[in-house]
Length: 326
Image 1 (tube, rainbow, N blue to C red):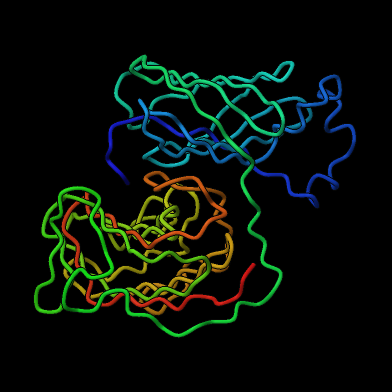
Image 2 (image 1 turned 90 degrees about the vertical axis):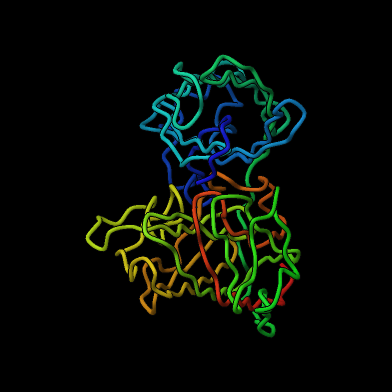
């Protein structure tokens, strides 16, 4: 995942969709009835943190455990989703703490906020004692009401140069013998074009011990890394949606071998096929993963290739966009 040393994203709380909420008994919310705004905190939140004038993304999900305890999940600017054991809530104000993950410093992060007018805002005190402000809006459901109509395949990599791509920082990417190559850790690479729903085909090769990833819409990372073939599947390992979705198996061929991902993303629903094997089948991605470009989940976004964790090569990147307008 992204190595930028910095803050956090807010912890998540599992969304209660309309059907889920109606399925809960009235008693489930009995402890919250005294404060009519408490139920409105439950759900998923796309957060934007002000990092010294720079906007960085984060994500929080809040859910109800039993009939009186709020818990959740949290995603920062880098790293994976992490659990939040308890969220205190009183009269529109909430707070929780969470241990540091990749952040500098050793103190727990403190997140405080207020719910008002359907939005949340507040402050984050990081593990090194620095304080930042944030604001957040409810995450969109991204439900699709029609079957996608697919357009024509588009070659995102032309096999000749970096046309259609830009580096985030000083560029180390090059094209050699028809192969898109990042020979060392450096800048991430982002497509100029943005997409909503699509089918993506990628052919790639990594070195022993290397690590990369493909970000869908620039927000959801499908992990590429040198996982042992006998490793227990994990959302943090090869072909996982980082921190959220675990593949059914590690279907990697190993380092120095050409491999394929065929990824279909429709709304939040993703299917990942690795070297011809389906390892994630039509599962929901709850929210942004660490390293996302932004938290604007309702918008189209680019394909982005992680280049800051070691050498990686691609010889083919093809996308078939949906032409429906949702």
